[in-house]
Amino acid sequence: MDSAITMPGEAETGAAQRGSTTISDRTVEHIAARALTEVEHIGGTAGRMLGVAVTGEHADRSAGVTARVSDGAAALDVRLSVAYPQSVAHATLDARTHLQRRVSEFTGLTVARVDITVTSLHAQDSYTKTVQ
Image 1 (tube, rainbow, N blue to C red):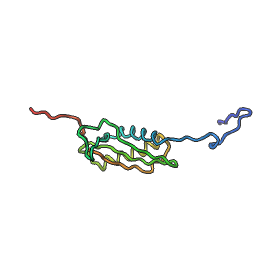
Image 2: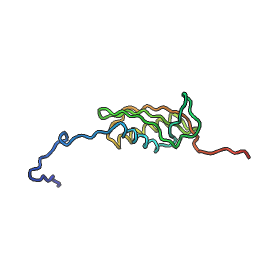
Image 3: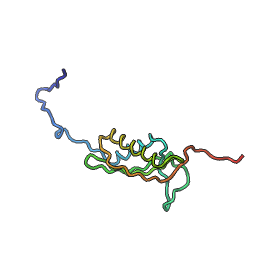
Image 4: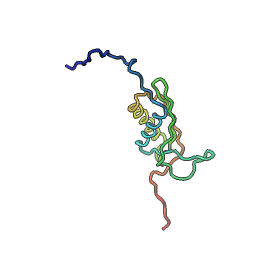
């Protein structure tokens, strides 16, 4: 049987007296962006100009994440790309589920909402066609 040892003159402190931990929006953004790299068929955001995706592969860039933390809950706005020809619905469901689990696991926050914007489709394998 374990028992806590209290040194003479040492008073027990409650949670309110020990302080609190604050997790910033920016920290949650970094954790979520990193967690998205663990999801298959998800890539980074495509650069856009006048609402049109700029050419080039952006699968190696990180997804864009904006987070708002309030009252122990996080709301995430995510911009990412999906590998073609994968189902956008399935890929985003996988991303949403993974984000909720990993952000909660790392921060202890409840992920109340995940809004996802798919900015483009990217080639699943980077290859170039050559004329023979």
